[in-house]
Image (tube, rainbow, N blue to C red; front, side, top):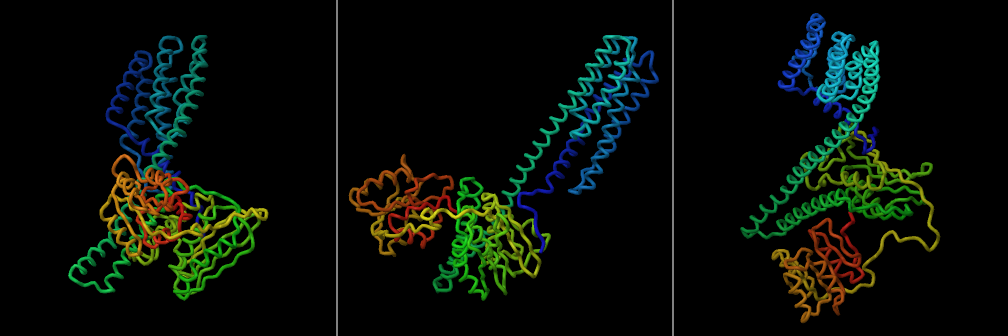
Amino acid sequence: MRATEPLSADAGLGLRVKLEVLRLSGRWTPASVAWQAIITVLIAAYFGYPDRPLSAVFWMGWVFVGVALRVWRPLALPDANAQALNRQLRWHRVRVLFSAAAWGSAGVLLFDSTDTFLALALTIALVSSSIAFSFSASADGLALRLALPLLIGPVVFSLLRSPERELWLLGLIGASFIVLMLRLVQERSRQLEESIVLRLHAQEARDAKQRFLAAASHDLRQPLQALHLYHGVMARGDTSEKVIQSMGQCLDALDRLLDGILDIARLDSGRVQAQARAVHLPTLLLRVFHLHDALARSKSLRLRLHVRDVWVRTDPDLLERVLSNLLANGIRYTQQGGVLLAARPAGHEVRLQVIDTGIGIAPEHLPSIFEEFTQVGNRERAPDRGAGLGLATVQRLCQLLSVPVQVRSSPGQGTCFELRLPLASAPPPGQDVPMVTNPGAGGQSCHRVLLVEDHPMVSESLVQLMTGWQIEVLAVQDAEQALAALRHFAADTIISDWRLPGDMDGLALLQMAASHPGVQHRILLTGELGLEAPPDLAVLRKPVRPLRLKALLQRGPAATVQESDKV
């Protein structure tokens, strides 16, 4: 099988930075060329007449050849090809050095050591030219560092050879100026490359967001389109079980897709943080195994578990989600054979592997499998084969865990995903933290619910749903109505949306209702990702699944476990 590089590697970044440097270096305007020609003529005339006309003409011709190379032989920006790019960079550097040598030769050809004023004026002219040259001739740091000695070196050499003490001291100052300019150019080049990297990353983020939204829009429209069509069928009087089941499948597809998008959004928001601790690996893997065993059996696949009695240091919730996504992905793309979940000690680490005998992944597709909505084996975008967000979620979770993912795959033979976790010491007896809590233990079911929801359709659907569960429901629209209703309606549960009309939101209402006699359960409904709620408050993320709401209502007051930050 073939392995991929770590997920954080970006082999093409340096190539793209070079390409951007080359693009910036090739820019010129007719105005800049015209001014350069005028300055060249003026310098040649001033310092060449009347004693050095031939030297002035030769120098001027040399400079104009360099200008002509830049104008009539512009840089060709190659595609992302390293060899072609390096060839263009070499040509650019040769061209820059040619022009630098042309300008710098004035320090010898036009230098007059017998006239202090002219020598000083020429030095000022060449120093000014070197500063302008460093900003306009190239964005390539190496080219500029090589060009600066050619620009100022000749006049410094002439000054140091001069018998005049003042010119000799000026030569020393010029040599120091070369050293200073070299350091400034190096720092400017570093800052330029950093800004290019930041700009490239920002562009990649914008492009990824556009691809994400385009793919999400496509996948959301498919079940919505089917729902509209089934609604038309039901409007004609066909309320058969098949139509209702088909609409349920559309809603399930929408629910899965929205859950995946919200998972990605929560992880990208930075609110999910890894809480590493000592974890008993067999307990965690056995739970993940049991969660997926029935799915594997339904496809006549064999799901196997191989694990040693070891402890690792990790976040159990995030690791469980990673392994669940990898197992679900392996089962989905395996038609015969099976899937193996294995943990093998290797030195001070444990190698966690999910190995399937599925369709495999071609080498050219390996770098893209962790992108959102990428499904190598589902180009037709069949909704029963997932939304293409599982591996994108795995990538983000592994980044939170600081655990790189390695992939080995062969088409037609299967795929192996591997993580490496550090071993940990078992905690002392009596200090083991349970892997999973049961927040519903000992709770009481809800019988009277006060629903605070200002959206009419959401409110009506929740009322009908809970009424069908034999729960008495009173619906109001804002916090003021809710507080008034509590005076005459003995509610044991309050369910409130977060965003409510008026001055009080749902969170403040539920906090105020905590001291109300008889209120045992408080549930906050929200679709917000950035909401910070107290740990004793149950939070349900929209869209709310009926079974999830029913389970929460039946588990009682201990079920105040937030789902806000769990992925």
